[in-house]
Image 1 (cartoon, rainbow, N blue to C red):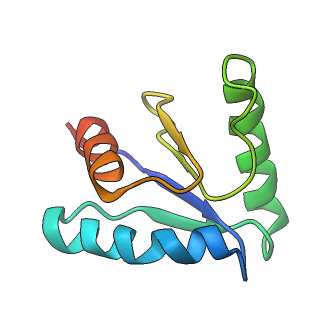
Image 2: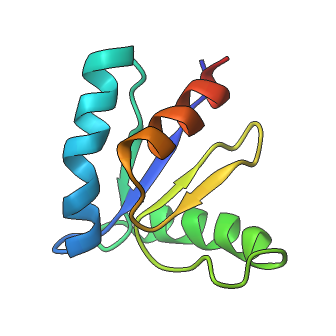
Length: 95
């Protein structure tokens, strides 16, 4: 399975909204997202920044948190999304 990344930040209200959906995804599908807190880890921040910089070339409004990224397919999600969108993205990446 791919290493799907979930970039978050401590005390990020949008990330707090997504965490229960990420947990539901793991429960229903066994797909585990690798959560990276960019406010606590400079290396995780740099990693997110690198991915977001490439995404912003075609999607300039994709910045901030939460940020979901699949390094293999380069597919991403930006910000809060509904559960169906998250699940569809993760299932596509995991296939």
